Image 1 (cartoon, rainbow, N blue to C red):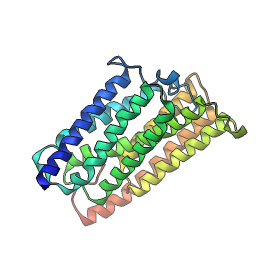
Image 2: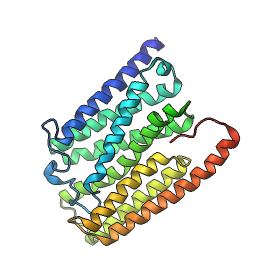
Image 3: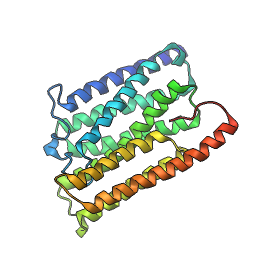
Length: 271
């Protein structure tokens, strides 16, 4: 019974990965769909809100999808079939892949409001997956990269994407900001994103992957506010400060964790 449930888990992850890749082709416009930044009336375009990253930021999806495909194939190998760590991670990762596809479809069908609960649920699922990676150490470098590294990158990017998505929906719905300026709202939201990055660095014992993708998004946000059509120096400065804070805290915690790990075990530190 256990063997059949393991095979089912592996199959679900692999099928979910294929579904997510198909969704990504639709979202890119390559399969006849509308590119995400042009869908839903351009609500998620780089100049739609002060929280939107510049276009090149979305190139990180190529790395994330590559990692997810690698994980889906790797976890299907016999060595991972009965591994307790993959038994725990499999279904949360599969759920994230399905939710990712659902989010793309919600944008493609101009269901912008629906995209918010979908991406929030995706964020919750990825937090769960990230927590599971913290409960035990990867067995080797391959697992460090395809499992821990992929989940970390995925989580960090979705964290900043959630902030951008919620802001886009509020702007599209005509939210007035309670009398506060757009610049101030942008600084407040970026400050929250920066705090999330700092907390992930501490909670994740210095995991580099979440910090890398979150900082990537914030850095391109700063570029968009300094050089794009929607300029905002306060938002750009806030994003730069957030990047610095996340990197400093994460690296500091990483160094401390590495020193402790070297004295306790020779197994690899997760990404």
